[in-house]
Image (cartoon, rainbow, N blue to C red; front, side):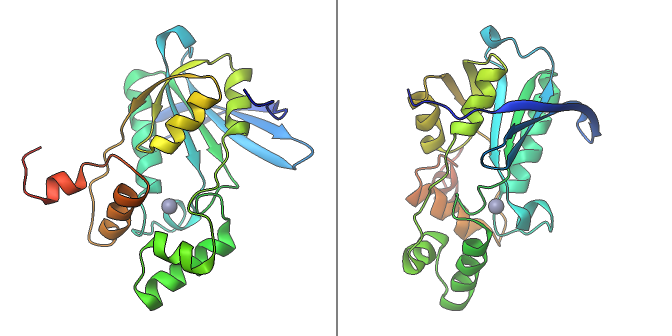
Length: 210
Ligand SMILES: [Zn+2]
């Protein structure tokens, strides 16, 4: 297991949301000038495999409501699931826009998608950006600080599951099914085909029941 970066708890407050109250912790890494948010409900007893969502920031969907991807829907669904159990945790990673390539890259990728009618994977390739360079070591360090070694990870991404297994966590995966719309269908199909996401789209579009 890799040595993890230092993530120190720096603050603790409470926020009221459409999904009830959450405890909000700020974890910082001074050297990287990085702050990671951890939203918590309940006792998080690791033996009970708490629900955990590790979420990478996506300004376009989360701030502006863009339909081009499903990030905003995924975090809201995760909050809803955590509220239903009154227990669970969200870790919000603010520097992982566009699968870790950053905001500048994301806007360029969107431009290429629009002008050249590319999928996001094709646009990444064309512009020379790696498909996915997200890192979860800061999230792992926060989980360690909170005493969580076992969890039900809310994700459709097998890469993320693999990353946390590699980091030594005991993982059960829970999928977040997002209903496609006319704008994100292509993006979601691309995720399914090129990122191995299990979204049930091909199955459903193919006319099979389920
Ligand atoms: Zn997004």
